[in-house]
Image 1: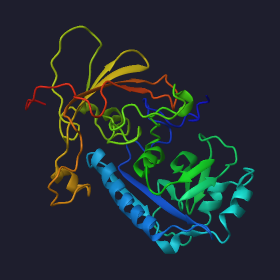
Image 2: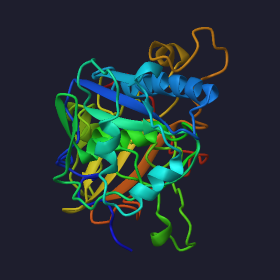
Image 3: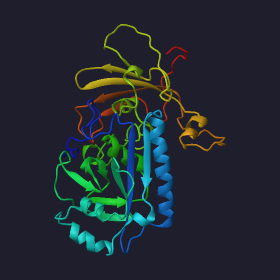
Image 4: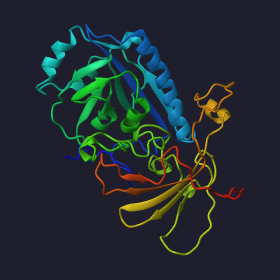
Length: 333
């Protein structure tokens, strides 16, 4: 099957061209869209408010608090309220003659806040057929207010779009902000003919979890000095890795296997409720753990950047529910 990434998503260095890697202040705008016959329900709006707030905390937590994220869901008085039924617009959009993204951006009312770095959409639940005018993700830009945004950072319009609420918000934001690629297997690459999620639970770009430490490094959240880069030799070496959640110390083991492949290791364990509460990811008085790793230990995985987008460039040694490799605890950094 074709590689639909058009070169703007990647799991390797340097970061993709349109990634916000290294930026210290990042603003995301979520724009709701209503049609005359399809409206965002109060329930969906409430769910979106929670998801956007928790999404901001999720990215702040994964960046170790080193990035100031500002996720904004447009207030109702600024929503896009299209006057006709959805069928009218589907007929207009089906030929691809209308630039749907720019059309929708032009409908936003009275938005006077600071210019966003990226935009995503919130549609009423249902199926949509949106044929975009052909363009290259590398070169296309969209106007919004006084700003110009690359197409890679205006995310969420697909030819066959099915809005099922706010599910997958954090995943979509990964595309919009950092050009993270999908890490699950597309149906066209899968032996079963269906999309598969090997390693689900370890990275939100597979389907759920936090982020691989490697992805945190690409995004600029993990510092160079927090990574062990070792040569691929048979010599015995002793290293000390800190938890992936620790603010200090080395947290990622990287052993290059060639120009395109690398073996990676990180220590996964649950963050404390107190830590998660600082980012709005846990109630202050929660009794049960808010982090849900079933086991603690060393997670090993391999990245092959030659593998096309959609064919799962990461290979993970353990399933989410598996026992991880046991490590010796130490106070050494």
